[in-house]
Image (tube, rainbow, N blue to C red):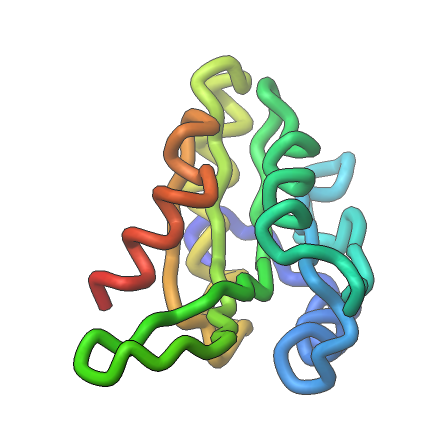
Length: 149
């Protein structure tokens, strides 16, 4: 990695709990306090009774407006087949790089240069999102990006 930041060993099994086991709705990754490794900050378990849209909107409200983070989110949505009109639930695993405008410049630089090291370790990502403002990661914006693919 160009930044010299290593991905902590706990990151991969946590990601697998989201990606293959479907136990987690999302994972928050951040830099360790000494900026030498990428660690799991928090996770949120899947709540099968929760409305997926409301659950995502709660996630967006939890995003810090002055700190960088990386998120992996198991995004659940309703897809309508245009040819048949059939609706069905779909999931896409998102990788979100969050670097808000109000974050410190040094933090933005370290997060940007360390991103690829984390991203390469996470197989099965369907879409990558870069956000600097909440409007770039809101539900409708994510839906439009997913449906373009």
